[in-house]
Length: 163
Image 1 (cartoon, rainbow, N blue to C red):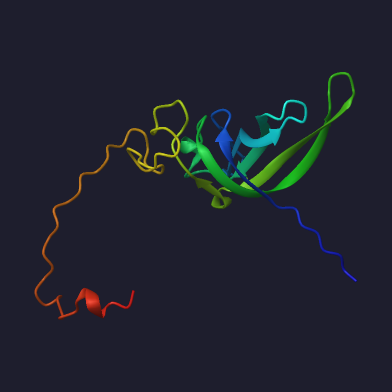
Image 2: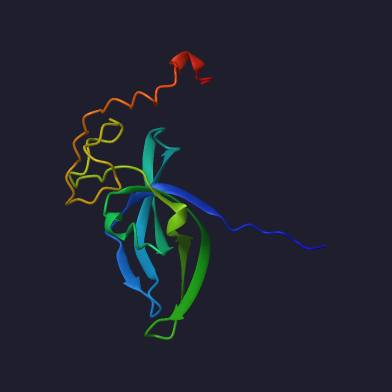
């Protein structure tokens, strides 16, 4: 009987630093950064709630289109897998580290950055510009609505639409 296994990580958190993006010799982009996730726990002695932060090392492949937006404080959602690697330090000691590996297609930019002037306070829901717009771009003005051509209007009203 074949055994099954699962190695899947889902995280929502904020970047701890701007992503460091490099390219492989074949031109594939790789971005690395740390991601902070928070959790609440109750102190057994005092009974007070405390917020704890966990830090995760993240490696994202094929970040050509999002690398410029992976900035400190930016909130993201990602899906990936855990990978543990090892190396020998200068003293010959074997060191291990674990990273979350994912592709950019499994990464979603969620909101503005914290403390970078990229949006209002968390939870307000009203952003000055979409996350996917470059910083240097100006927000486009709404184009005046044009009346549809007379032959386009085929007598269909809102009551005819089933949803």
